Amino acid sequence: MKALIIGAAGFVGNYLIDHLIHDCHWSVAVTKLENEVIEHQEVEQYNLDILDKQAITRLLRVLQPNYIFHLAAQSSVALSWKNPSLTIDVNVKGSINVLDAIRELDYYPRILLIGSGEEYGHILPEETPISEENHTRPGNIYAASKVCQNMIGKIYSEAYHMDIVMVRAFNHIGPKQSPTFVVADFCKQVAEIEKGLKEPIIRVGNLSAKRDFTDVRDVVRAYSLLMKKGKAGETYNIGSGKAISIEEILKLVLSNSDTQISIEIDKNKLRPVDVPIIEADIRKLQECTGWEPSININQTILDSLNYWRFH
Ligand code: A2R
Image (cartoon, rainbow, N blue to C red; front, side):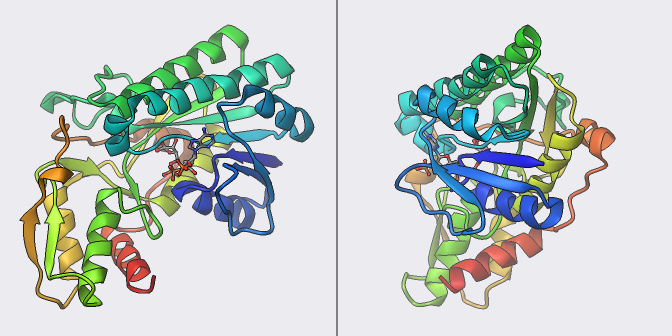
């Protein structure tokens, strides 16, 4: 099996490459932006900006992979408030470029489109845990762009009989994640405090929000399982199935350090609109694949903290 990961230089791509090579034993090619570096020397690497549709066509005509994991995105909610048009360009126009290039080539790979638990947006208490059938009420520009990507995936799958599976991945965490995301941000701050690089105060945003966190190594396993077993045109939630408050996360991070650290609210870390609770109903994924998360949250936090301690 030949797999192509589009947008492999990011947080998830790094883990997905490892998993596909070492656990699935697939042949793997990857794309990245020109200025990005992918450390895995063993994979074929290509520069690709998904805003350039002709470049996508040229690459796919030559490679013709059986499986395409579409990861390329502007993936930060915070940046989507600051740069909404870039977010829409990359996440909507870029995704349609990928799908349309495949449609025009008249070949039928299986495509996994990566969406987000953020798509559900303002979830009502009685809708928790949230299932794939629920309404989406996106609460930020990133979420809106991923809802749009999901709808386009469904339309292309039905209209052109393309083999597209959509996922809604809830928050995924782990070593090497950018500190624009909350767990990595907390771990990096604590590691800097321990090294004496920063005063012993951790700056935090909204602590009451509850999110469904899964280790990225479990998430990529769900991706390959859905590639093998998912049904075309369907959307699958990927999450732990249990929401935890950011305050609990903060406590876990601090409990893994011996240093005395005080907590301060930083207004810059508060969002214009924040969704109170996001928790995944993962029965559809489990019925289809038998997937279970295997790494508990404290282990992920410890691994992330150790990553920042040694970098
Ligand atoms: O934004 P950058 O410079 O970090 O590059 C990201 C890249 N990317 C693009 N690739 C091709 N053409 C573009 N026009 C373009 N714009 C951005 O996609 C980055 O290297 C990669 C996405 O990786 P991350 O931002 O680290 O996201 P992560 O956590 O790996 O998530 C993968 C997927 C995304 O679709 C998320 O929205 C979803 O999972 O949660």
